[in-house]
Image (tube, rainbow, N blue to C red):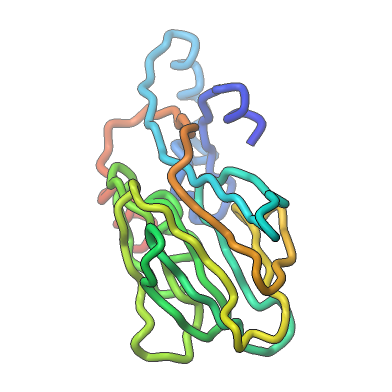
Amino acid sequence: RDANLRKIPILGINMGSVGFMAELESTELDQLARLANDDYTLDRRMMLDVVVQRDRDIIFHDIGLNDVVITKGAIARIAHLAVKCDGVEAMECGGDGIIVATPTGSTAYSLSAGGPIVEPEAHSILVTPICAHDVASRCIVVSDKRTVSVTMTQNARRNAYLSVDGGRTLRMNMGDIATVRKAQKETKLIRLKSRSFYDVVRMKFR
């Protein structure tokens, strides 16, 4: 987050997890010397801009690289959520929540919830239900030109919780509107290897 605000490129080093955005393994630190010679390329990743409005006032604003997640919280109950794309209803479901993800975030929480793997260069936004109770509720992939809005429906009796990249969290009330669109800012990742995204997918899931 701090690097993005200062437009500083990021080099990821995998220290033991899956590490889709990690360029180097912990055993490859000798390649860091290439940075001093400008021997690298930059991979630009789209981000999401999220705003939450309450009674027309903006009460929350953030940007994220992976996803915006709206969930029911820790209590075992159903979150009833409605999703619109450019003001047109696209989905209404009850379940554990909704994930709005970038292509980069498609290999994170969205994948665990049954969403597709999308290559980072794709110009799209993913909307993935979490444990939906309606068998007709499926992940949808929309253009990055769309504006996605999420609200709790009238039969939702409790709060929902919104978080961005697993960080800042907001408790949403009935009537709150979470609006998600492509951010103007980008994340810049340093690349030292000329490998395909599909090579990375095969390596991480083998």
